[in-house]
Length: 247
Image 1 (cartoon, rainbow, N blue to C red):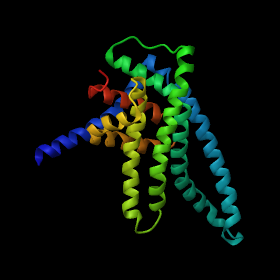
Image 2 (cartoon, helix red, strand yellow):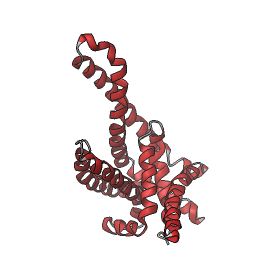
Image 3 (cartoon, rainbow, N blue to C red):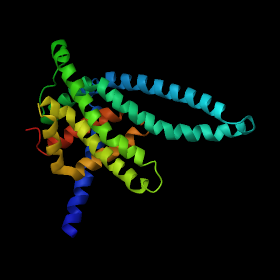
Image 4 (cartoon, one colour):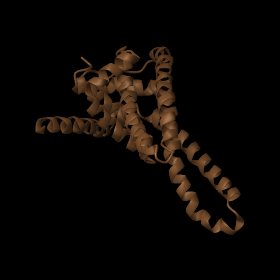
């Protein structure tokens, strides 16, 4: 029992350490430049999301509240804002991952080269155009795979009584999916197909769940979520490398 607990604790710790290691990897001068375009994409999308959400909430609450309750808007608007931001930011993270997929693929390729002590891979226009559609197509498939399973769980998690089970399951599935999501860029660079990716990740579920869990938490934090995908891509590449999946 003690040995199993130690193994499980070590596995979870490994997933957490890999995500944190992603921060250090992005500080490398050569790797840093592969983050700028995804970061700009995230800033644009999240700025639009924040502005649109704020405008919608203010106008909606003003319309719904009776005039004699307008004084409560200072409390209700921030409360709704926090709740909606979590959902909207997570949704926009999925969208930004589709748009930025080719850039994350390039980041994963160069993180791997750095870990192996190999020369960095320069992006060429020919490579980028040829690879872009494949990366985006794979990303769309992953997002559809997620939405088909996560949306019913999310709806069930809003039903009193049922949410006691549905919400934890949704969180666990989302955590697992994010490890699948961010490891996928490195897998794609190696030509590993969708079902094979899932099979490989099933061999180290605990580190993957821990990694995905901290990625999910980072995604829900404003400002941090702008860099969270790039950190997770770098961290997932390191996790696969340390487990010998990139030989």
